[in-house]
Amino acid sequence: MRKIIASTLMTLDGVVEDPGGFGGTSFGGWAQPYFGEEAVRRSIEKLASCDYFLCGRRTYEMFSAAWGAADGPYADRLRELPKLVASSTLSGELTWNATLLEGDAIAALKRIKEEDGGDIMMYGNPVLLHNLLENGLVDQMDILLLPVVLGTGTKLSGPRTGLELVQQETLPSGVLALSYKPA
Image (cartoon, rainbow, N blue to C red; front, top):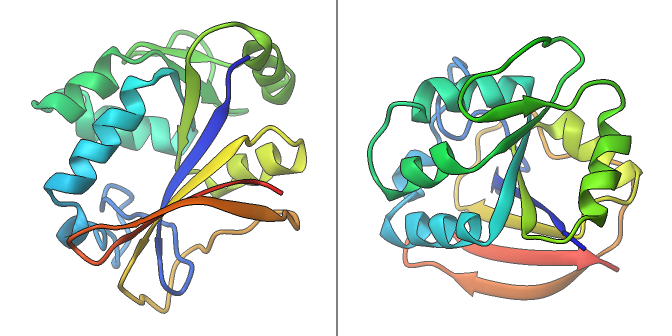
């Protein structure tokens, strides 16, 4: 049985919006100074253990534009990894090795989780994360907590969910790598 791993970059004040600066916000790109060699290595390692990359429409559009033609091991792994896109506004064929989860995305993800194989990594999309948590589909939540306060932006939210810390590490940049499972 596959696991869904929800991974997010978050500021000390809980902001998860536009860490890479691809979303066009005035405060975007706040994660760039902290995304050093160790964070890149960890990201590639986590993606290597997965069979799918799950995202919503905005993350799909931003990532395909930003990473679709980029070079390097991280971009290469993202490009080769099959994407599952949960969206009620997209239709038809997608590019960047992506498949649209048409109809009920939650039901489709439940079926995919039941299959044998590697895990499903999800980045971004607080709305999708909320729905996954609400339906008990998140098996692991990885948070890279960055030592910055923004004071603006979309914060991590969801239904009340108890989590148990299963792993923690401090990266050389001061970033806390935290891994939780549902309690």
